[in-house]
Length: 172
Image 1: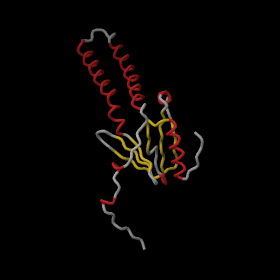
Image 2: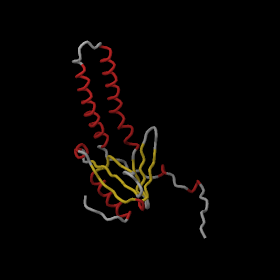
Image 3: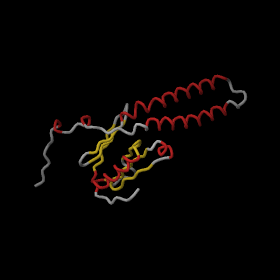
Image 4: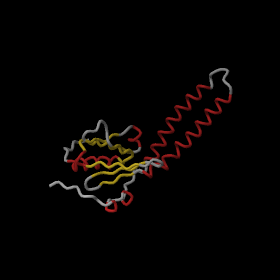
């Protein structure tokens, strides 16, 4: 006969008590380099506005001030957000946490994972980083993406998760 007994809330595991693995130490630097590249392109656009005739000085002062404020925040933010990200491998699932203001913890059971892939951008390769993306049954896209892993760790995680999921492991 089917039974579905009640579970006491005190018996549930607490995610804060886990030993969270941190992302690669170079990940903050990689984000900052990307920010500098993006803001350099924006600065070129702002500099091109200087050639527009008969524009008062005040709009330029406001634009450049906003650019400096946004750049400052964007350069400091990785130092705040990256240490608050992490992952934990457990016997039956993987957990990933992120967020400074809006925090979230995502748990993906290994038995739902169908595909795992690693990827990296040219900037990731410069810093020897990779991204791990997990795809589960019924998902329309990647259900979990962990950016900022070391290249070797990402590949080892990919193979480990595929083995736990019972999926064939193909060479990367």
